[in-house]
Amino acid sequence: MKKSFFVAVLPLLFLACAGSSGGEAGSAGDSGMGDAPCKECGARGEIKLKITGEKSYREWNELAYGRLDSSAVVGVLPTLKVLAGRPETCRMCHSYSADALDFDLAHIEDSLFVAAFPKMRRELLLPGMRLPESDSLYMDSLSAQLLRSEFADGKKLEDFTPWQERDGIEQKLSRQLPDKFRNILNELASRYELRYVSMPVRLDVYMDPDLGSSGGYTWKILWCLWDARYGELVFLVYSEFTAETTSRVAPEKEWSVPFAPRLWKMFSTDLKKIENH
Image 1 (spheres, rainbow, N blue to C red):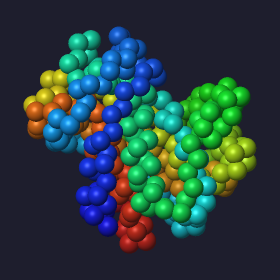
Image 2: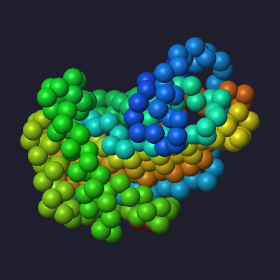
Image 3: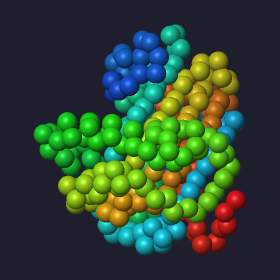
């Protein structure tokens, strides 16, 4: 199933061209990177990447996963925190920005949800989309609250440390969320009539023109799916790697493509057939 899905979907993913501006910058001079027109992002051949330095962790709540309602409504949050880093001089960063990264990741997420849960209704939690414009301040406050919420090992949700220290581990685990965190999820579910919330918590990407044949980047992400009604984690994926080009085409777009099979692994695995390791 996984192989056939990606044969069909990946060519479509390579057609997207993310080029919006703004967002949170990871280095000086980042704010205007999305302003240049994307004329060079046409069909210039396939971006071929070699993945190295990989770290990963995933966990799932067996009870929550087992009662997953594939016809329920899932609220889709944009990435709560994006750090888009690059050198001061970067020949392949004309379409690169925090917003472009988030936009690219959203395409990947949407494709995976459609494949895994075709009956699940996905509602984009953005003012002007699913939400009224008047909810802008609420959503800004929500993102800040979630990032600061205490989670694993008593650390903030946005902290990568717990997952980096668990490299290579896959395990079923039922975490008891602090009441404050659970209440935030419950309020979100009630306010917008949701059952689940998909949450890219934090994404750190750094572009490096000196990697590989035509440049590359480092990627770190924490991605979670929550049962907001019950106030509990369904599953969590941490993924970290370096992507180096082996082709003449620089990674000016589709930065999320290598993450797709790593997230799909969580969507598609029969958790009853694997043991903790």
